[in-house]
Amino acid sequence: MSNGALLVPAGFLFSGVTAEIKISGAPDLALAEAPEGASAAALFTTNRVVAAPVQVGRANLKATRGRVRALLVNSGNANCATGSAGLRACTELCRRVGKALGCAPAEVFPSSTGVIGVPLPADRITRALPHLLETRGGSEPDAGRFARAILTTDKKIKTAAVQFRCGQAKARLLGIAKGAGMIHPQLATMLVFLFTDVGASAADLRSALKNACRSSFNRISIDGDKSTNDTVLLLASGASGAKLGNPADRRRFARALQEICNSLARQIVSDGEGVQHLVELRVEQAASEAEAERVARAIANSALVKTAWAGADPNWGRVLAAIGHSGVPVAPKRISIYFGPHPMCRNGQVAKFSEQDVHQYLRRPTFEVRVVLGRGRATANFWTCDLTAEYVHINADYRT
Image 1 (cartoon, one colour):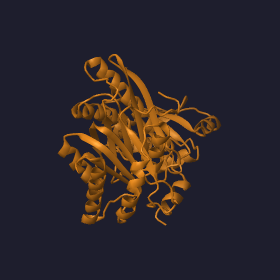
Image 2 (image 1 turned 90 degrees about the vertical axis):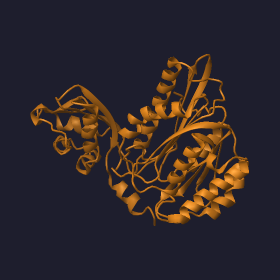
Image 3 (image 1 turned 45 degrees about the vertical axis):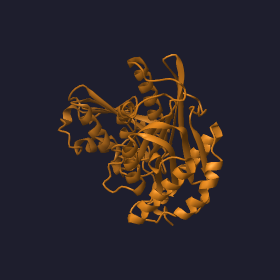
Image 4 (image 1 turned 120 degrees about the horizontal axis):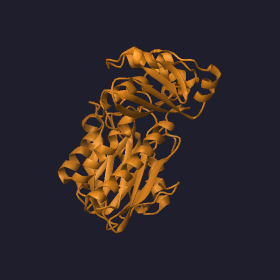
């Protein structure tokens, strides 16, 4: 994994500009282009209320059988609950970008993030398109501009990159994400764009992406709310000459993809709205992995648990209560809970611990909570956070 360097894969150009969608005047329109085209796979939100770009993006991928020439992303406006006008605006922007690049409109993949229920200012985006296209390039600063233009309430850009061997060639994989609130995936509750210069079919990409998301983006929660716009898109240009030609190369690619997705998932949670603590939650000895994940979600989405973490309060009883209402048929006498190295509960009863020592441990920016169910051998890891007054302030003033 690179330390800060974006390691831009071959075969991609990036751009990010200001289209005046955001009141702040911050960058809010981004483009990623594969001049020779790219194979593509995507996963989307499972929220039944979906934004126009999700509908159009799904249709476009189906029409091209997983082929993408350009990705167009706007921030500051979700283009959701905007009716037929929102769909028309999204489709028209794809047409305009396609015309400028000399490709079919269906080869343009749209994505949006921001306020729900506000008409998309398509005229502003249209005016900004020439500048967006003129300034695209394949350098690290170009990719950085793309990464900055897709942010909303995020405090930091979120990127991860890795170089790996594939056959006799070296390949690169770059991930760029946004997400700080409305994070509770059951697929992926944020925008994540993954770029690689490996040659791969859309089917190969779909399989790898599903596996990588299952134990990364599907194992995070900030506030328990599913977004309407969530998208994870994986593009492969093939420009490095490396191909997924044998099982060993597929495994190397899968490991690289998992590494990038895990890093981005952690970055999203740690940059959550008002977050002070990243919590690494581990549920052990469940009867199945699905059961372990269900318990982890119950803990991660408990407002009482999360507010205790915000105050570094060693209130393990709230964790135990969340386990009990998860719907998993646990036996309380078999449950043990640990805050880092500190045993809080053994066999359903309080363990001896130092209140002061545990309080100091919970003040760390990152800490671990481990739950042992005593039901089987399955384990699930989950990343979550605390819930602070700052989260309330940010979301109380989001539109105004």
